[in-house]
Length: 234
Image (cartoon, rainbow, N blue to C red; front, side, top):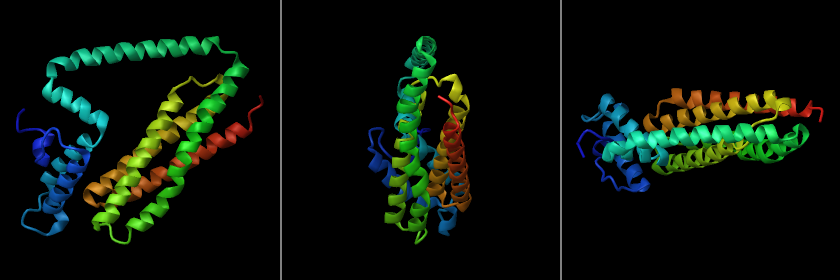
């Protein structure tokens, strides 16, 4: 392993736990953050630290990164297998979609996709303001920041479940507009969580405000999907 990698940047072992990664990040962020007014403040270094933290605290991204870092000879084969699996899944979904009766398919989609996705994302959308108000007491307080980061991790988990559920079945033609609104809602919500996580890396309020705006857009899109459902004739 070379020294030019995320583990070296955070000064941790490749087998480090998520908690150890977070502890290392907090220690380095305080040391190098431009607003710390210390001799070690370094904006370029904090960017490297943020990138390393983002990758290593995301299980999927860390796994892919480790594969490329430690087993580069298997990366190309792994991507090929993934492409074949994705192609097979898409073909299977198309075949399954053609086999459904339209009315039956619609009812199944509403019960197994639309409603579960809403149950997952509504708490995320409604709890943001409360979480931000709690953090606003002192964003530089370690416990408050850790609570906010835990909240974002829970949001990310629920969003991932919502995305998996949304992709589990092709939408029937009568709800194409509903599905489109829901799709863009999930995308905006994911981008919003990304922006809020960036705020926890560097305390730049621009990311906090952007995250709030993306949550607002996601809320509007969910309402549009809900209104379209109410006007369905089935």
